[in-house]
Length: 169
Image (tube, one colour):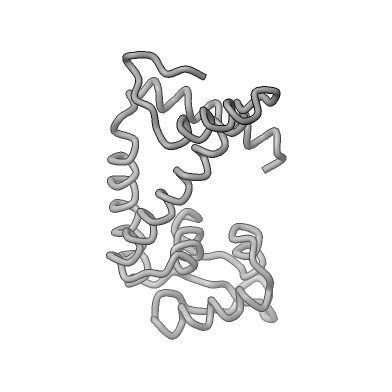
């Protein structure tokens, strides 16, 4: 791909140009897309970690607390429902719930429908923490996307959704 006068090149453009010189027999268009996705993923991960740190949360804590918050009032899910939303093992989830109970961000409650089961409920402190974090996260991510217009963001979201669905994600 050649960069026009109205477009600045990035590191991926330089890498692809070098590969095109060395291996003109290959189509490097996948690198142009996925190398950028990879680089942006690393930048996003750093930005998210900073947001969570400012909210005194670890990324794994965010995963659990945000799942509970999204569940709506009474902000409660079973450990199995949390497993499905966070994609971790049962042992890992038990450990995470224990740690969040210790921080008083969640509590375990008997399931009224099944006395042998428990529900994990977001505490008031957990809700305040996750609400602050989501506000910071949305603000930080809007800043990261500020170079794109709303219609550009919508088109990019649609393309990424299409790609994600093609992976079965």
